[in-house]
Amino acid sequence: MFALQGELGRANPLRLQQQNHVTAPLIRSSCKRLTIASAGRQSDVSSEAMASASGTHAGRSARELYSVSEAACCSTSTSATQGVAGIDATVLAAVAGLGLTLFALKRVLDTPSRKYDNNVGKEYDAWTEEGVLEYYWGEHIHLGYYSDEELARGYLKKDFKQAKFDFVDEMLKFSGAQDPKKILDVGCGFGGTSRHLAKKFKEASVTGITLSPKQVARGTELAQQQGVNNVQFQVMDALAMEFPDDTFDLVWACESGEHMPDKKKYVEEMTRVLKPGGTLVIACWCQREETPEAPFTAQDKEDLQFLYDEWAHPYFISIQEFERLMKGTGKLQNVHTDNWNKNTLASWRHSIWVGVFDPWIVVSKGPRIWYKTVREIVTIERMHQAFAKGLMEYGMMAGSKALPSSPMPAGAVAEVRTPVTASA
Image 1: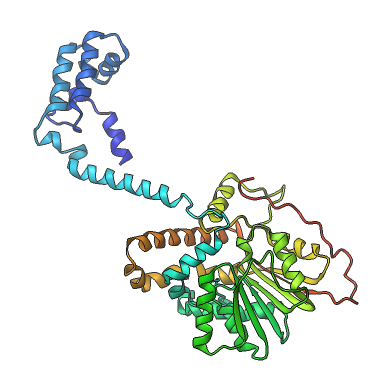
Image 2: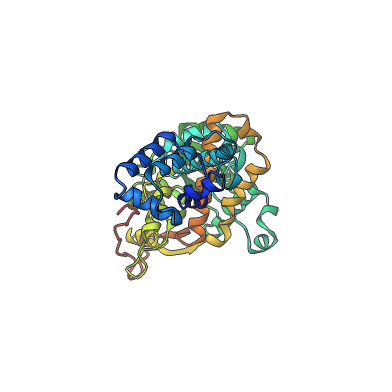
């Protein structure tokens, strides 16, 4: 489209008139104003430009130029309505309209719609009520795990929902927890992980907390349907938990830290309710560590800001910052971390494909859900790209709470940096 416009800008109206061909329909009044100005002031810029464009016809009078331009802009002949290079003007108008529509749609989709404003519970209430997220993602609202062998075979050959259960099993291995009796799931979603752990540790009591009342209701309903009696769900703020100190053997936090407006308080509260000798394990989307040697570019900051603002995230921190926060409590030991980008990255596009293969629940929901689903697909793809290029990292962090008689290792209390957000 832009190339055609460029050719139109270079067209010679005199030569085209001689050839009995008009390059494009022009607005009558504009043509008249241009040529009248030429007649009145042949020495001004417009007349000189037209004279230069006319080549050997530079000596022709302003009246002749007026006649030619009048014919060009006012003709109703077939050639005048054919558009550029023989393309029908209707086709050009349709292409231009489509281009403008796509541009406008991109502007809309590039403008975040769910900026963090203490609205996490409200957003998860909406997702739960709509049912689309549960339909595609199952009981677990977190990424899945794909082994190296499964990735080699092709991630689409793995069941998308099974990948979530596999993630929980791999996260449990990473934690090193052994036969916990009291388990806390911080940010439990529909309670998929809580129920899975309750089934695995039948003698344990499992508690899941979330800001979403509808998630509590749905998690409780699913537990009853599955006959899982050693699990319960509560609406509770993870930054101000109502549990006493030293309550749980295992504190589990899978993809909840992204929504926390105070990451330091988040880690400290989970450490507080953890029993001495107990295990804290965290899985969280993290942005890469920014250093003076590797600062965020303007594009990095723009990309991160979109990811913050579209899914109600206040900000992300790095894996290294999580490690500093955990050590900074002065109570956690054996802190270890890892980046699981390789074995979780496939989840993003896999989640899109399951919708492509089975779109009917979205189709049946009507225009509002169609639009919202398109937004989700765009954000999922942008998440994939951010993780694929290393701007984002999948952080795994774990540690154990020191026993009262156990001395903390030297240097356990680490310096905690003030996190740098994309808008800083």
